[in-house]
Image 1 (cartoon, rainbow, N blue to C red):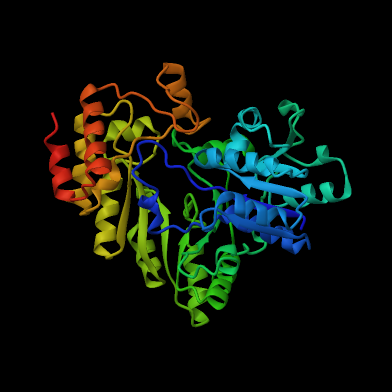
Image 2 (tube, helix red, strand yellow):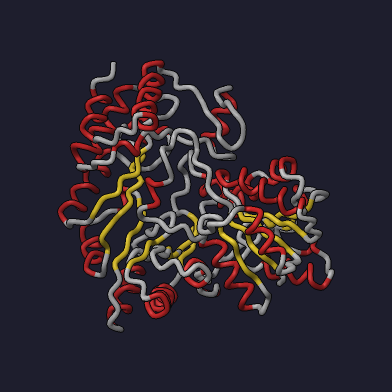
Length: 448
């Protein structure tokens, strides 16, 4: 075996009840690793994966099984909230006398490579940016004993990050192979909802709290959004239907839509699919300003049943502060359209942030309960999370309002009434396990 990937488990950020706010609709399969596996298999390179979101055995036992395959490389993909587990796994690997290379990649290493090296001494190398092609180059270099330093985005402990040999960029997404669905193939987990990436990046890319926006700006120095053709998307969906008998999937895009020129590509892909006698229901993510009656009516016709809308808030000052690029009017209109079309709304709200007031929090809960009719408000003891290298993170750092240790940072709310409400809600939900929407809603609305 040439390379084995380990996918560490997610550690919940403080202030989030659970990842379950998303997991009812999103798969656990790591789509990034699925793309890397596909690229390696296409190049006839031996590659496997052990995903700790699926594995049931103890960590040591899983790693022992992996090392028995004699891999030359262990690759670990990490996000800010999987770093602690990734660090633990790397220590176990070295304690088992693995003499090969340990490499890390993903959003966090691309945004904070120095931090990763300093806090995980077991790591030999980091690959920055989009590694669909460079992972193949890297493995070949290890196998052949070639020079790593010609690889785009390659970093070692002795590298000068200011002299990186470029960032790897994937400009033509249609050239990438279809992701290797290891959740289905390796673990036979048929209940996993597959995610499909029809684009990369974010055409808006200004939200101050978004690590994805920071990630792509770091690579491309701009808001870089690229999309796949309708034919390419249709081919992948047909593959999922034929191979996994998949009848429901989720678009994993940061933003499925961009301009009038490209917004119909999804409906065109689904139309092609239906012409072949295949009908699949699906969910997508979008901003409130993307929701337009004619487009969403057509998408419903082809299987759209659920939409995750990143409202974040219905407070105009808060929307402006985080540079969301939407308005309260957009929010109201989006809800009206989706309700008329009878498309389920999964609202994305983050009521608590440093400058929050009781008034802004009450408006958010009012909008969720009264306007949307959402009955899972216990999932919204959520605060804006400080993700490394985002403008929000840098702002807290500059203000001296960043506490705790990586990655589970905390901060203080400037309004003491908000701090009390936040603490009281955590007690009610986490300790008393209250999920009654009306009780929690009344508690928020009566806060003083």
